[in-house]
Image (cartoon, rainbow, N blue to C red; front, side, top):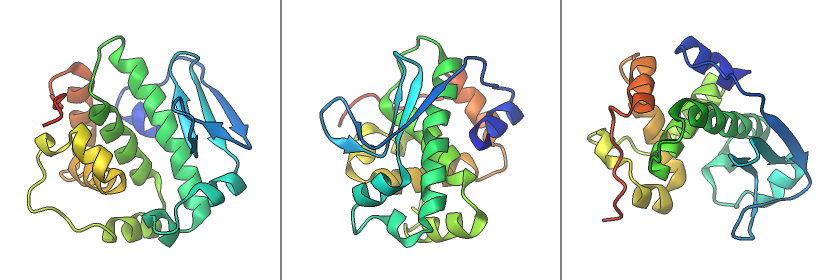
Length: 179
């Protein structure tokens, strides 16, 4: 509901039914256990049980500093954001960084204020927040820092809907090159 509320507010409502499965184990395509996964081919989200999530989270993860129920709920929002975003971009092939930028920003925004502030305080604010910084290498090297800064970037001027609409329309370009 939280993910959909944001997208609806921005004029990008979910139209397609989405199946959500809660499983004791979710395995990503490369064979590793993950907390949650959006499967665009089957139009479904698979999410690990709350107990499974607790065992998958790494001890040093920034998520461990937060109330785990808030983390769990926000991860569901992250995957729903993937689905709604995918629905609105159609068949265009955008870099993974573009998808994760939207999903992380919406996820972090969905957290209760205290939890969100604590999460964001874990990561130093960069001196510059330009869309060019959000690329697949940054995502691979520091996914949660990428997410924190995606949130800061998308919500910095109170014009998140305008920015989201530009991304959906292809007027914001995320680098596809691994430089």
